[in-house]
Length: 118
Length: 111
Picture 1 (cartoon, rainbow over the protein chains, first blue to last red):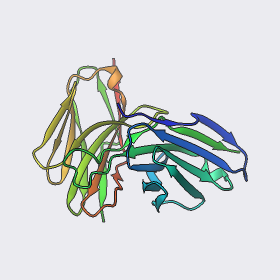
Picture 2 (picture 1 turned 30 degrees about the vertical axis):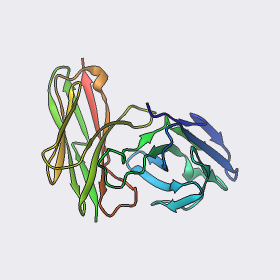
Picture 3 (picture 1 turned 180 degrees about the vertical axis):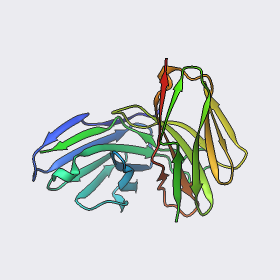
């Protein structure tokens, strides 16, 4: 079974702090994603990475950065946390299979990190 | 513009009362349509991938079907443990790995 783990289930930080959210997957997936999920807004993509050291902006990258130094690990960084970044953060991974023939495009999610910024 | 709309927003059923959830999509060439289940406070759990119209997949009390414009998630004789939010997502042919997500249907099964 695919397993995606996230470093914390719950996190409380203060405005202006630098926050690191870590995600690790154990299935040798090429692609990794960071989403945030807010009531009424659904899942929104922050950043994704299709290879080590490669990254692309998603729909809402402002205020965030990412790092992927190893294939299995993808980190989300809030350089200076703000109260509007209070949210549920979800990490996901998927195989690289552009044509979907072998079902490689499904994303598998971690348990989520509930971040509160005070 | 690629778009996914799920209906209804919420659905309350009695245990054993079968029903269907709808996912309508607009995408420039479908690469795949995905169904997920999400329990409160947890990450989405992958259920099914559908690739072409006419395709069907089943898992326990759930059956997903696909047409050229929509997908249905049929729930047969549901149990209280089937209560969750069900999410639908699509990937278009010109998508660089990204999925377009629906807002979800919150399903409540009363015993």
